[in-house]
Length: 117
Length: 118
Image (cartoon, rainbow over all chains, first blue to last red; front, side):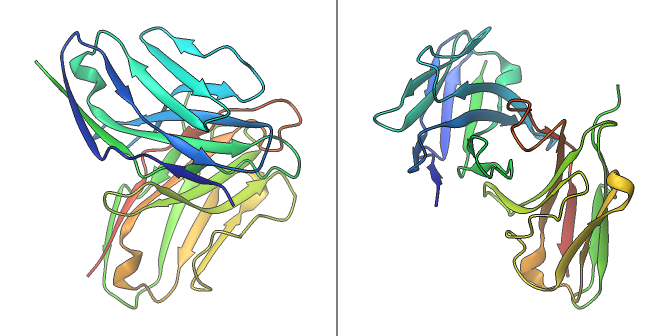
C-alpha cells in the first residue's frame, strides 16, 4: 500500500520570502504521479503542481516548484515570493500510473501554511 | 465553465438519521470520486466511478455508506444510521478520465459538504 507523510503540521513565512514544505511517500510502484494541492478556508481543493515520476525534470508553475528525489521518495514544494493569498492548508498526494489505476489520490495529513504580512 | 457542484454546503442532523449528499460533476467528466476529510486530517478516498464500469468501493468505511451515479453524471452519497464519527467534510471530485488511458487527468474538486452529527 502507498502512504504519504507530511511531517510539518504548521509552518509560517513572512510575505515575499521563500518557504519549503516537505513530503515523503512510500510505494513499490516504479511509475506514478505526485501532486500538491492547496486548500484555503473556502474548502475547495486547488491543484498547485504535479510531477510525473518518470520525468527527471522538476515541475515548476510560476512561484511554485518542486524538488523531486525519486530514490529518496521525497517531493517537497517550494513557494517563492510568498503572498498573503498563499495562506492555506497544503496537501501532498500520490496516484499510481495506469496499470489497473483507479485514479484515486492518496493524501498526506497536510501542512497549514500561514503567510505573515 | 461551471465547476463541481456539491449540495448541501452544510448539513446538521441527529445521530441515527440517514443523509444524502449530492455531487454534480463538470460536464463531460467520466470519472467521479468521493473523499472524506475529518477535522484536521487529510482526505480519505471513499469511492470512484468511471463511466459505466462497476465502481471502486474499496474506501467505503462501512456498509452504512453507499453511493450511486445516475446516467453517468450526478452522484449521491448516502450514509444510513449516521454516527458521530461520520462528522466530516465530504468532498467530491471529477476528472475527464480516471483510467490513465488518455494520460493523467487532474481531479477538480467541489467545495464539499460539511456534515455534523449531533
